[in-house]
Every structure is written in structure tokens, then in C-alpha cells.
Length: 141
Image (cartoon, rainbow, N blue to C red):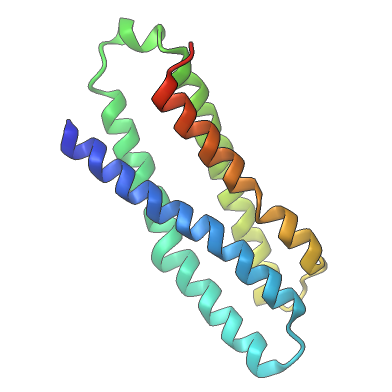
């Protein structure tokens, strides 16, 4: 089980690296005004999204579900902190899907949001990361 937990954490770090960096790329892409830069950002965003971020997210979720399988059914029912973490995980998956939708807008040259909006959007994963780490380490309920 420790190996599964270790790889769950490793791929979670990979996923979050993408969740932090892709919106940052969106900030700079929203500021970009030349065609060469626009094309470069599209390549970088695609490779990050599909080569690092999405595989990291999928493997993180799969390993997390595997870890849940180690707990007896009765124990899982009493782990309120884990229920909260799973809810945050579902919301984080929603954020990931939102990133995909935003990436599609950039890819089709129809982005309508400002770089300031993306700067705020870029802060969302920080809240998820802090909340999830605190839930796991403190197990408050």
C-alpha cells in the first residue's frame, strides 16, 4: 500500500504542476499579439495538457481509488476527512475540465477573457492543494 500511496503523491504533484502552469500560460497567451507567439503557446498548452497534466490527473485518481479499496467499508464510512477530500477531488476534476474548455477557446482563436481574469483563475488550484493536504495530514473529522 505504501508504494501505491507514494505513486499517488508523485502523480498528484505532476497533475498540480500542470494545473499551476497551464493557467499561467493562458495569462501570457492572452497578452500575446503576434502570430508566431500565438502558435508557440498553442503547442506548449497542448503538450502540457495532454502530455503531462491529464495523464497525471488520471493516474492520481486511479491510484486514489485503489487506496480507498484498502479500507474496510465500515472504516471508510467514518472517515469524514476523506469524504471532504473526495469532494475537493471532484471539484478539481471540474477545474481541469474547465481548463480544457479554455484551451479549446485559445486553440480556436476565440479567447474572450483578459490576462487579469486568468491571473485570478490561476490561483484556484492553490486553494485546492492547501485544503487537500490539510485534510490528509490533520484528518479533522
